Amino acid sequence: MSAHQYDHGHTVAGWVGFAIASVGAGVAGLGVCTVSGVLIAGGLAIGLVSLLVTWALHLAGWGKGPGVRPRAEWGWRVRDSAAPGGHEECLGCRLAGRGRRAAGAGAGAGAVQPVMPVQRTGEPETVAAVGTDSVK
Image 1: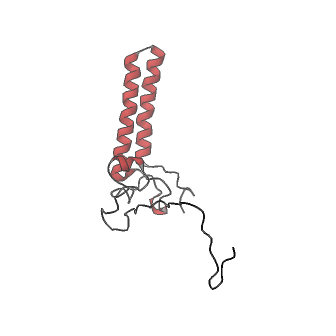
Image 2: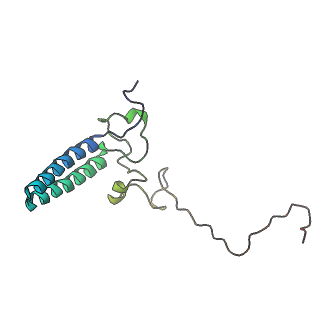
Image 3: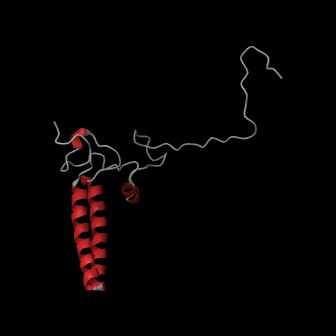
């Protein structure tokens, strides 16, 4: 049995990104305390690096997409099997050109088909019973 009952999303990408962002926040906080614009800017730059490193790790399969993963992939040191094709509802995957696919770009099982909007015009239609005259 697993050590936890829920998929909390603990991943290598998440932990590494958190560690780098914590260092960045510490450097920026030190900059605020010492009134040093260089340290504040450095802390913000480290925060940006943490974002990029987390994104790169996610795309390499060390993160997770939205939703619950299969139970076999709940461990934080397990690579995501869906990462090479991209996660359908993931902003990071869409920014990298993965995830949602165009309707004509492959008729595979993962292709997302567009939904046509329903157009309603005029009065609502009434349905008459088959074989009876409509009452007016």
